[in-house]
Length: 93
Image 1 (cartoon, rainbow, N blue to C red):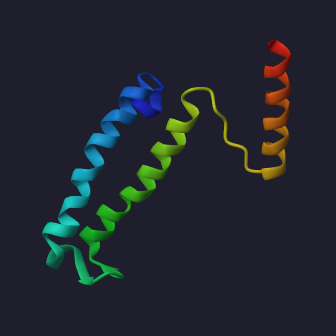
Image 2: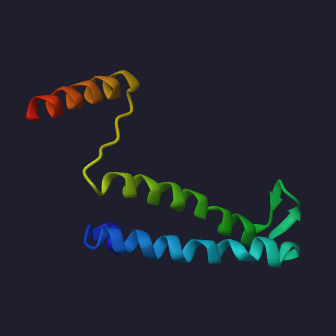
């Protein structure tokens, strides 16, 4: 709900960081139930656990933008934005 509403984003990310390591524990403690063949054939339960890697990636992306950062897909545009920001910061001084 925190990511959907945009409220308490930092607290939501903290809770995500605290919760996700616990979700991966069954991969180690119960390998017979989570793997058909280690390490490339997870069972349905194992796949459900591994999908949390996508959740982690999304959390990292949201966490990177909480403080005003932005995601730029074009590397050249990102370099141009960095140069403009550096120039603006020098002008402020």
